[in-house]
Picture 1 (cartoon, rainbow, N blue to C red):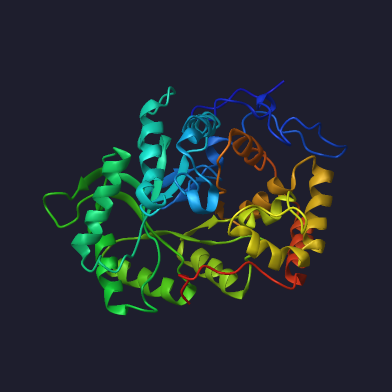
Picture 2 (picture 1 turned 180 degrees about the vertical axis):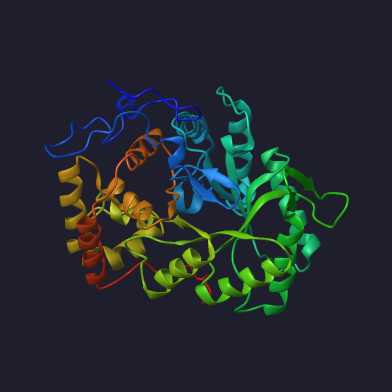
Length: 388
């Protein structure tokens, strides 16, 4: 018999999850049966002032025709994806003002805004749905005011008054260092500065330059050195840096990623892990004779042949635990203290990814996976915008 859900717990218990790959598979001998929801309220993760689910979902594919084959006919299923995620307690959704190709630029934000408005369940507080969007460091965004303007445009597309996390999408330090400071100042101006006097919270809006457009501030594609610089600068302005989004997976656990994770842990910055499945390479769905369509096939052809040991290890652990390889790879990120944000395009993706919650890999399993990953001759190519 399942334990009764606590207040604020996901509405659908793990045992009642629909259809999902790996969610209805019978547990093998020795596997732990999870009673109750996928995660309890006290298992939520802190990102600055926010409480979010241990896993979020990424929406890069929502509007991207080139890489992910988006068509507007997919919108109804994308809305089902959002609804299913929310009903299972997922409250973190990552997007960007640059998501969407050509005339569909910004489509991901527009869809998220529509899905929030049309969601049939209760949204009683800002923590019920946390939107983390990233603002591109375009070369024409040269002033803090222009960067704040980008945030306002995102809010308009999302039809929201305030964002959960406002993130600088990448650093310009490598090619336009003078622009970087203006972008940092833009983050400061977006932030909702709060001081606490006893039990009284004083919100500075008209009384200061802080415009209160975001509840937390984050960065993306920052390396450890540049992260320390922006953390120090924001702190001097009274603004905490709450999150750092980076490519982080069993295929992206090099020295720089691990150093970044160590720096984040020491400063209280939460790592948000994008591409936790290595663009699909860790799912076990592809091999040299079965490559994905589009530009990804070039990358897969280069890296997949050297992943036999890692994929074999993922498969062995997945079979032992009654999970899928994707669920094991995502759970590894959770065990490392990061918040994975796998991308979703279909209800089946959501169902499968939800199966990464409610259990944990053992220390021995984590060690086996990391040993196999380190032995792979080629790793995931890092984002071209990643700084040192």
